[in-house]
Length: 266
Image 1 (cartoon, rainbow, N blue to C red):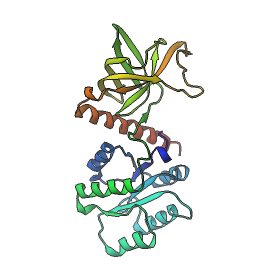
Image 2 (image 1 turned 135 degrees about the horizontal axis):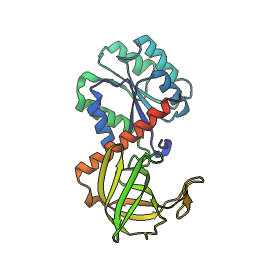
Image 3 (image 1 turned 45 degrees about the vertical axis):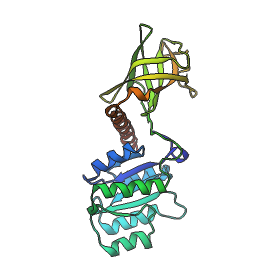
Image 4 (image 1 turned 30 degrees about the vertical axis):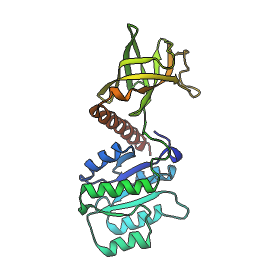
């Protein structure tokens, strides 16, 4: 899972209607950390443990409206830092009044009948106003051990390793064999493979990666294999629009799968 707070907020869409599919893709394209959630009870437990998050609730699904009202009021309890917004096809003015003026949801009441383009525009402005990106420029995905691999050629030798995390900007890697690469080294045709997707681009080594206690340390042995940990950045000139879109799609898929797995424990 990715850190929240100053490094960005998780944005949950609870019981998202089909019309949100295209909208979610655009929000991910704008580097918001978005998730689709379909269990309001587990969502409430998750939000209790991750209060610096934003949730948009589809009032048309999951619960009856009076139950949603109680649910939203609970989320908006005293000293709550959870950002709450509601979505609905219902354009009833009294309903809007209740959520906007009485309950005072901070992230608005969005009527889905206005169309996907306008809905997207409103959501982007709302998320920006609530500083959903934090200080970061890019959403990154943390990869479970063994779930993401990287390969490439350097000076005629094949480099292999695991990807620890990645974004559209770059990757943190554990390369096998304890290989030593200087900062500024260019890795041509470096491949990321994760969740059934592959992206190839040129990378530039920027630093040895700082590792936490318990992780494979640079040039040390882990499980009988030696690793060297690096941070590499994609050369922007090696990524066309299709590759960037694929990277953002993979970030979303990896993070969504991570949240789904976490929800199984709630």
